[in-house]
Each structure stands twice: as structure tokens, then as C-alpha cells.
Amino acid sequence: MSRRSRSLILLLAAAACSDATPTTPGKVPTEPGAIRVLVETLGSALDPDGYTVVLDSSGPRNLGIHDSLTLNDLMEGPHSVRLGDLASTCELKGTNPYMVAVHPSQVSPVPFQVICQPPGDLVVTIATSGSPADSDGYSLTLRGRRDTAVVALPSNGAVTVPGLRPGNWSVAVTGVASNCQASTNSSARIDSAATSSLGIDVQCAAPPPSGGVGRIRVTVSTIAILATLPSSYIVSLDGNPVDTIPSNGSVTLTDVPAGTHRVQLGVHSLYCGAWFDAPPLSQDVVVTVGSSVAVRFSVLCLG
Image (cartoon, helix red, strand yellow):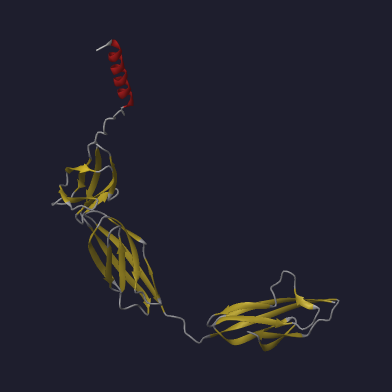
């Protein structure tokens, strides 16, 4: 082969190499992530059979009261871990479910802390006074963080409510007669393995009689400046004329039904009216049974 032929072959080989498309190495797959669940239980009255762990929507797995569990082969991204099957004497401190982010080739920790305490009792003492008393008793509603208890109460006496979870419980008394009023604290504190107390006082009074009447005492004072002093005015009750009254004097309206009424002073003279800053010549009053209500008018007449 001549030198010229060899040179041509080398040039063709170099051109072929320059036209080849370079290859890139494939992406190396990453290892899946994992979650490590750790449980710590404090207190007494512990849960004897432990708890359950639920990852996202998967089936439950058992876990002891002082235990750990590793959940492997998890996809990257957010996951939820729920701790369940807690005894009634136990309560989880913190959020449940616990939200955790899983990263490739990493183990993400999920800590749970459970506090167990024996329940407590509540002694409720009820005392009803006054007449007529509410004889059919009342209803007590206790609301805690996770539980609600409804208890029937007598009109007088004491009732023990056992097995309440320690903590603050709201208190509400219902079933009280319309003529009675209950007085008690709005909340009760339940301590673990202890007896707490709650007092309820109910006071009853006879309702006011219906159809009763009262009186309205109307007084008028008039000053005339360069004008003739009127001799009298008309007193109206709820828009109806009921009596006359001297321009400086008073009258008493009797047998006025209990309730709210409007008393008006009829001043027909064009130059007479209410004093400056004085009550208007039409006033609303509330009459109660057997009472006497005072209404005063001040009139100024200017010529």
C-alpha cells in the first residue's frame, strides 16, 4: 500500500469518529427511603397490649409501649403515620397522624410520646332552695378533650361520676325550671387517681303574678315669659287621653297594667313646649305590679 493510500484511510477513519454521537451514562437509580417509628410511654396505668401503627392507608402494625419499628422501601415524598389503639387511660402528646417527608436512601424518624394516667372521680353536690322548687332534678353535661358524660342529678343530694380522664372538663346544667336559676363553675378539674368536687346551687322564686297593675304619677311645672300661663294640659296614655293636669300640678293614673307604656303631655298652645335640655313631652315608662312610677314634664311658654 502506498503512502498516499494509507493517508486516505486515516483521514476517513478520523471523519467517521468525528461524526459519531457521544453516549452518556444512564442515571443511577437511588435507594428507597424509610421511616423509623419510636414510641415512649410515661406515667402509670399503662396500655398492656401496646399500640398500632398505620402508614398512609396501609394495614396496622403492632408496636409495644416502649418500642421502635422501621418501615422500609418507601417512595420519596410526604407520608402520614398514625398511632392507634390507645387505652382510655392514655393520651398522645403531639399531633396524630404525624406527617413526615421521606428522602431517598435516608431514614426519617417519627417520635411518639404517650402519657398514661389513672382516671379520677367527680363528686357533684346539688342544693336547691326557694319555692316552688324544681322537683324533677336536672341534667349535668361534662365535656373533656375527647369524652362527654351526661349525668342525671337530683334536686338535692350528691352524685359521684367515676372514671373521668384527668384534665379540665366544661360544665353545663340543663333541665332547670323557668322560675329557677343554677349557679356553678363553668369547668371542673379532674386529677389523676383523685376525687374532685363540684357544687351546684339552684335558687327558685315564685313567678310574678300575671294581670297585675301599678300607678303612674305625672307632675308638670310650667314657666311663662311674656305669655299667658295655660291653666291645664291633657295627659294621654299610649295615645289615649286619660286625664287633665294643672299647668303646675300633678295627677296619678291608677290601675295601669304592668308593662311598658307611653305617657304624653298635650300642649296645644303654639308658644309652649318642653324646656331646653328637659325630657320630651312624650316619655316611655315601665310599670311593675304594685309599683308607682314618676314622670316629670317641664314646660316653657314664650310670648
